[in-house]
Structure formats: structure tokens, C-alpha cells
Image (cartoon, rainbow, N blue to C red; front, top):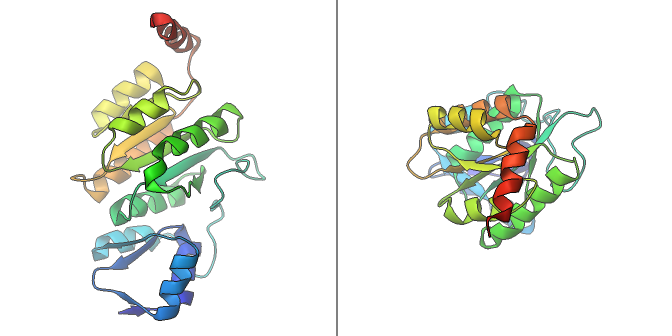
Amino acid sequence: MIYTARQLADLQRAGGAIILPYGARLTPLAKDWARQRKISIGYGEAEIISAALSAFTPTEPHPHADANAGGAPNSTGTASLLWWVDGPCGAAKAALAGLQSQTPLALRQIAIDPARSIEVAKLIAREVASGNANGGIVMVKNASAMLVWTNHCPSLRAVWCSSLHALDEATRNVTPNVLIVEYPGITLPQIRNLLNRFARGIRPATGEIKRQIEELRSCG
């Protein structure tokens, strides 16, 4: 199947993520459109594409969509999460699109190059500290560096979880406001379940958790 620039624009307006079937081709104008806007295009099986688009009308923007990572949550005061994926992972973006359709949270994409992951951590920290965001979702090939970057930011409590049990434990113990997911080797349903559980459980840290974190900062 061949996709035009207009079709790509409709897909982006529908859910933010552009996910095409394996083997899909782009017209020259479509390639130029994606290149000029620095948009990554994911490829996947029919299940992934259906999950990403089923909740949206192709020609209408989702009411909570907002591609600008630096603004306030939205005009209605809805809480927001920033999100970033370090590559063209169709399953990750499909799960995010599904989350956007199922939660009142406003999801805002961070458009930063994968080579500048530390800048992603800084941006999420600034937005959380200023009250413009409640937290973030980071989808990466390898979680190690991002886990270090985010947990050196005073406003962030980041966890790396690959199961719902681990996420539930983390939510009880440290009330994380950043979820890091390693997407290689994990299925679309698993990613979707992690994102939904995290979004439902995000809340401010208790006084005791803040005290423990502050205590750790004096460890040297």
C-alpha cells in the first residue's frame, strides 16, 4: 500500500504516532513531509495499527492531543504526562496512542533526538518541577542511562519496570512519576498494561518518601 502526505498528516492528527503496515511505501511528497517535520514512522502488524487508530476518527484531532512538550497541561486543567520514544517502535507508539484514548491525562510528546537522552530527563524534570506536567513515560532500547539521568533530578522518581507486579510494588513504595520501559522483547499488550497501570497510579510523593529521598542526597 502507498501512503500520501495527506494520509500521514491524518494519522498524526489522529493519535500522534504514525504506524504503517510492514511493506508500506510512501510517495515522494510523503517522504518530504515526514523529513521536514522530523517525524519517525513506525511499522508493525495489523494488531499494532488497529490498537493505535481504533479509538480515533482519522480526520479529527483527539481532544487531549498536544505535540508541544513545553507548554502547560491544557486549558481545562487536565493533568498531563510527557512521553518520549528513542526510536521508531510501532508497538510503543501504539500503546501510547491507546493510553491517550483511555485516560483523561493529556499526553505530550517530547521531540528530542535519541542521542540527547539527558536532555529528555532535564525537560521532564523542569516541567514536573514547574507544575506543567505530572510525570513522564520514557520508552527506550536500554533503560540504564535514562534511569541514572532521571533519578538525579530532584523532582523525579523514576522506575524501570517490566511487569505489573514490579510496577505495583514501586507505586506502593516510592510513588514514581516517571515510568521507563525497555521495549525490545516486550509485547504490545504488556506495554499497554504497564502504561495504563502507571497512569492510573501516578500521584504526589508522601512526606515520608520525600524525607527518605532527601536523606539519601546526603550520602555522598
